[in-house]
Length: 468
Image (cartoon, rainbow, N blue to C red):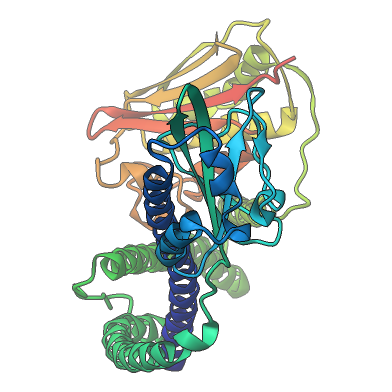
């Protein structure tokens, strides 16, 4: 990781150096062009001043003398030498603007540029480029020769400066060497610091992998890494809680298995002894039947939980009168509720229809009833209601049982929570709510629980109708 970080920083530094070089060349080129334009403008303005000196107070034809400066040998030519000096070696051209706004000149520089009528006007220097890429400035000036007003154009041209890459290489090499040195030192320091901080996270990860679920990452001192550490600590805490719940689940299931097996084993020994009356044999047969059914139910519940996690688990959908279906399931618990001394009431009107699996719906209602009876003491009550709310069928089973603590309430649907559930009656496997949760999830519904310790619990299932 340190090596990767080092080369990453070095790569970024190299890329930064190249970008700086490119920006430097671009900026230098633009600065050189701007400086050249400014020099040409100064020279053009000085040339205009010379022309004004030449033509001041002269006859109108003096303008022609100015235009023919290159072909004459008189006094004007001597003065024009001043213009050449001010131009600093730039190409010079002089022209006039005709009445229709067109430029008239025999100078070569005007043939290499394009000036639209009205482009230039006195007092404003015009910058342009020639067809060959030369930098050109055109400075217009108004001259009055006798009664004649003339707009004279002075154009200066010079090749555009080129900033050579070779000129930048020495400075670039020095800059790159400095960047590389700083990058190396920075990468070394950063990688060491990061490795030390990540080492705390790596050590905690190894401890968790080895089974130490209490391992936590201390404060690292970096905001970003502290967020990672906090997420890791949350994960470790959840893993620890899950492991504890799983252990309790195994203990609970083991207890549920051990009790009927112990009973069956004891009666098996009595049967082997062969000294039992017919009345005792009948009683033993009843007990063995009850215990075997209890084992069978536990196995069925564990099998259902396992199938719920498989992708091939499927539902058989048909139109079901939910109220009638739930009432039928609750009626099947009437005898057992009477034996336990628990009063059961049902408010499930018929005519509330839903496209769902009737068998799974019945399994949900059955598990909710078993859970309620299991936790409701004698003289308590269980109330079952079925309603229709906003395209949802709502099934609620409320009891006046022992209730659930605020700490345990979020975990009531967790299969690993079975070992911590407090029940009044030992019947059942304690996996009913976990199965309800799995089935409701498969039906794209929701289930939640509300409870007050010592007052009772209400489980509410909401199954949505598909939108048409």
